Image (cartoon, rainbow, N blue to C red; front, side, top):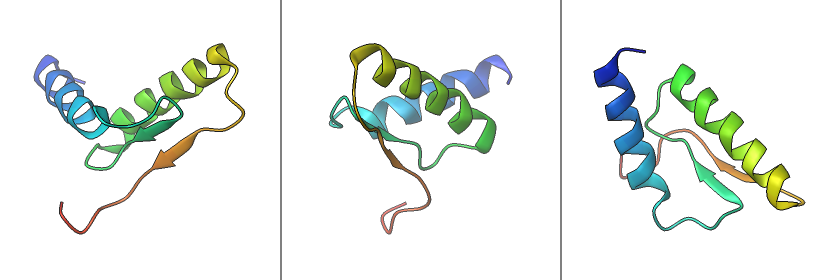
Length: 64
């Protein structure tokens, strides 16, 4: 990813997840490589916190 792509995906991810619970990660509006990066981070974070599940939101919402 280029620097601008990283900044854009970080902003999108932050906006999507600012109101999500710790065991939820919202990946919609991200390209596959970006989504995979954040998904792997979320899985590791859930494992570190001892979570028994991780809710993953993918795809396009009706408001996108």
